[in-house]
Image: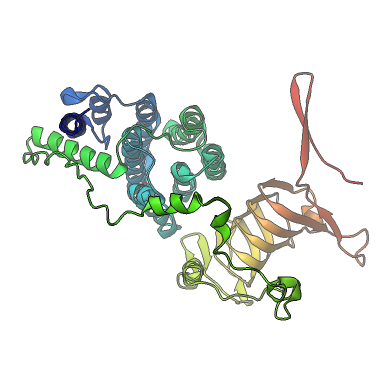
Length: 492
């Protein structure tokens, strides 16, 4: 084959590649659609709108179906029962799931991006999730605090897209945390207000079906398109399509597509490593090692006096700037507060305060303890319920509680009842010491996802020491007669 013929064939192949790239770009600009807030956006993308050959995979349509089946009825229920703060929160939830739908549509068209690019793609959803949680934190006195908590505890389930290799269990954990609060709503309104029940049903079922959806389509991680374009290109294309849709509805016209990609041939051979020298050196045979230096006896580690085979003890290194910044952010709290608002006492953000006393109480009042560290709190009289959240190394002593004393997300907590309490709930805690009085020995203790828990009860006589009884953490389950039987594990 002559040189001229070879050049002609090469130019023909390059022209063919350029034509295919132009076709791909036109398809992305004219047919790829970001599913934002309506199902029409996804359906147009899935059906190949504007002549596009791209057809969205089933996992995009099925996620849209989850939104239509559960999130839209959830919004409708909130519009009927919600206070302004709950309506604002559920509006952000709707935006968050639609943002994730847009992300999945990009994934359907894109190759798996780098970690930095993935973080940028997830930034809109992550920001919305943070705003959803902040609404709960800013409205703790709200009468619908349980509603706000059910949503804010469940919304982290949307973070499954950045978890590998098992994203499904992350959703289960978020759903379990959410149900702690949604069960309270059911207990209060079941058989009384169907809109309240619909709120709980739609949110819980969405999280449950999201788990099944992940198992079906994204078992180990988000499913990407190995033959797709770069994620940034797909994002730009979907943005262009969204602008085009706006223009057709009466908005300003979309800008024309950019020029086709240009193929650059690298003819600069001076910047490339010379492989001929490497192969010529390897072809020397035995002479290839002639240039290596000899290792003498005094150079060996065993003969060197400045080296030792003993590994020195690791010294405590200073935390890096990123860790120090993260720790500072985690330690940041709001202003300390001990205040009665309506019929709720708020004890928040206390550090090293061992003289907190609540003396003026009433049976219709609730006690909410939040982010208290290394503190002691004493509550006199009879109150309706006591809730301790996100606290550590804190002791709480109270006399009577009519309904329940509950601990959530706490570490190293001592809870002592001197009077009577019918129920104690412990959820996601570690290191709990529960002191029961003689009048509270029949109290019901409900635990979930907690460890290192002990119950201390009075001895046989008034002068006897307290008896410490550990709460079981390990269980075994057996199938017997078609039923699952679970019992605690006893060690000899």
